[in-house]
Amino acid sequence: MRRLLFAFAIVAVALVASRPDAPLAMAAEKESKIYEMRVYYAAPGKLDALNARFKNHTLKLFEKHGLTNIGYFVPTGENNDNKLVYWISAPSKEARDKSFKEFGADPEWKKAAAESEKDGKLITKIESTFLTATDYSPALKLAQSNDGRVFELRTYIASKGNLGNLNDRFKNHTIKLFEKHGMTNIVYWNVLKGQKGDDNLLVYLLAHKSQDDAKKSFDAFRMDPDWLAARKASEEKGGGSLTEAKGGVVSEFLKPTDYSPLK
Image (cartoon, rainbow, N blue to C red; front, side, top):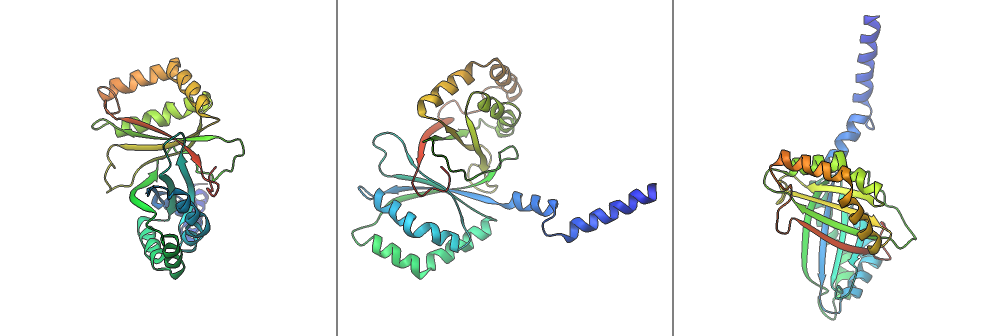
């Protein structure tokens, strides 16, 4: 029996090693995949032109050069007419850099950029953050919803030495309680190792039926005895609040553009 089991083990290892789609290969691919969050600030009156350029040109050129379009959003509310927030993904940081270089050199892109900027530049500032999915993040699905849901981008700055404790609290408690109270977990990220913020930033995306529903859900969540117990235990372990006292939690509501893969 021992010889038989040993033989099976050898065969299993050989099969995994020989298959490009084996679980180990898939795990390695998942670990190396990166996301990039890009925030564009449009010049006054140019947001519509910027969105038109993405819709008609940029998205298909990103895909042509190996970049996956995830979601394109603008803030909700008034006085938010100059901001575009979007996410793309690539197999690795090196692949992303190669793709962006090829994209920038593409004659079709150069033509589209020149035509769109004939009356002036469309963008005044660009912010970029490289991210990797946490081990507890749901698999990101590019779902299309017709119910007009809104998205909430939340950024947490962990207090010194507490990013691990913050991630553990989300993994073991928070995401389940969010779902319990009607919130949809979309994706959870930490900053790519070697980048600024890799020791203290958690970035995640939720979906709600509406902003009013978001408020009701969070009010109920904050009063939940399970949350109160988890928070108390985690803060005792971490020596206090797991997020910075000032500016440690930032929330922004977003709505998808009409061309966003994720809605």
